[in-house]
Amino acid sequence: MNAHNLQVLAEHCQVSEVLELISPRWKMQVLFCISQEVYQFSQLKKVFPTISDQVLSRRLAEIVTEGLAVKIQVPDTMPCQVKYEVTEKGAALLEIVQDLHEWGKKEWE
Amino acid sequence: MNAHNLQVLAEHCQVSEVLELISPRWKMQVLFCISQEVYQFSQLKKVFPTISDQVLSRRLAEIVTEGLAVKIQVPDTMPCQVKYEVTEKGAALLEIVQDLHEWGKKEWE
DNA sequence: TGTACGACTCACTTTCGGGTGAGTTATTGA
DNA sequence: TCAATAACTCACCCGAAAGTGAGTCGTACA
Image (cartoon, rainbow over all chains, first blue to last red; front, side, top):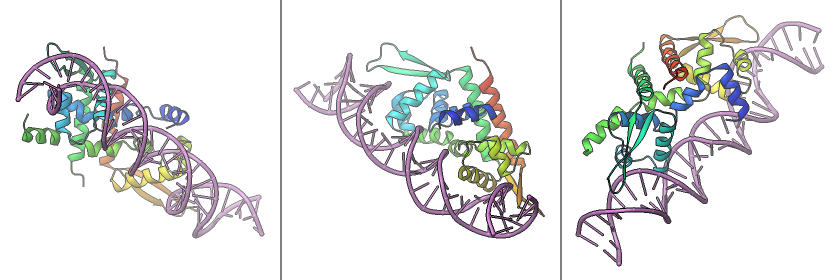
C-alpha cells in the first residue's frame, strides 16, 4: 500500500481506515477475550495456541494505542502481571463486530 | 481456566471468517460503488484509478461468488457491457460497514 | 486497414504482515 | 545453582496478496 493509493482510498471511501483497524489477524479476537476478562499474555497464548509472541504483543500494543482498551500493571505481583480493560470505545466496536458475526451466521436464500 | 473453557472461548472468537471476507483491499469500497449504481469495470477503474485490473477483476468475482451481488450481462451492447446488483445479503453487510464507518467518525473521550 | 473500447486474463515481480526462535529482566521455588 | 514464570523484544525469513505490463476477443467507426 503506497502513499498514493492510501490517498485515493481515503478520498473515495472513508471506511478504509476502520477496515484496516479491524483487519489485522487476531485483533478483534484478542479484544473480545479482554472483554471476557481473559487479558493476561500467557492466558491469551493458551486461548490461541498458534499466535506468535510477537504478533500478540503487537496486537495488544495497537489495541492500547487506539484506545480500545487500557493497560494496567497489577501491583505487587512477581513475576509482574498486567491486565487490560476494554474502553467504551472498544466495547462499541465489539458490538458491531458481533453484528458482523450474526450476519455471517445468517442464511440467505 | 481449563482446557474446555479455553476451547469454548476460542469458539466464541470465531468472527475470523467474516473478517477475512470484508478485509481484502478495495472489496467493501467496490461493493459500495455497486450499491451506488457504479458497476461497470471501466467506471470502477475511474473511481479508483490506482486499483489494478487483476485485483478489481478478482474482487468482483469474489463479490459474486459470495452472493453479495449478482452479475448481469447487458444484452445488445457492443462491446459487451456488464452490470452488478447488490443482493439483500450484500445490502445488509453494507449497513454494518456503515456502522463501522460511523464508529470511526465518532469522538471518544 | 487499423485503432479503440469493454471486460477481462496471465505471467511475473514486489511488498509486507505474520511466523520462528532466541534473548531479557526480575524473582521464586526445588 | 538451575529451572521456571510473566511479559515481553529483536533479527530474520517466508508466503500470500497486491501491483505491473502485456495480451485476448469481438466488434464498430474513421
